[in-house]
Length: 82
Image (cartoon, rainbow, N blue to C red):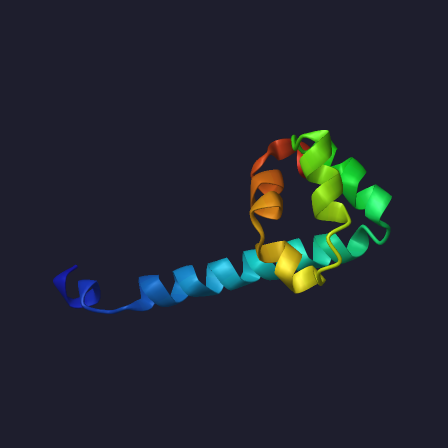
């Protein structure tokens, strides 16, 4: 155990895991093509109506939105799986 404890694979895997989750949220945002669909799915995931509509109509790209707090909050809830 002492030999493997010196490696930094855990950190590399955590960074990779974070990037993969970010990419999956980006793909999910792109699947919801229309802003009304995005708002509806965000509300279904537990966001308030005001926050869901502000997030869906913010005119930012999918990569930015997939890293934003509204997508992090929405994807943490188990109801998002559609």
